Amino acid sequence: MVRGSFKARRKTLWNNLQNLYGKEPEIKERLTKALDAATIKPSQRAEQLSISDFARLTEALLVEGFK
Image (tube, rainbow, N blue to C red; front, side):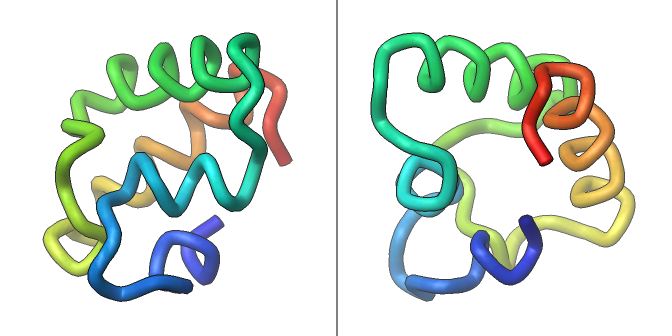
């Protein structure tokens, strides 16, 4: 997930996560829930996140069923 977040440097975290997991409406809803749970704005870029932000996001994505 971390590697995928940095795949396209100039893109937002939201765009990189969609490229990694998919753009179907159900996937977008689960991604939104995970970002909300991790208190991370979808408009942020990966390089703006701390290690603890990535840890929270990883945990939230696992709860939503992402690997």
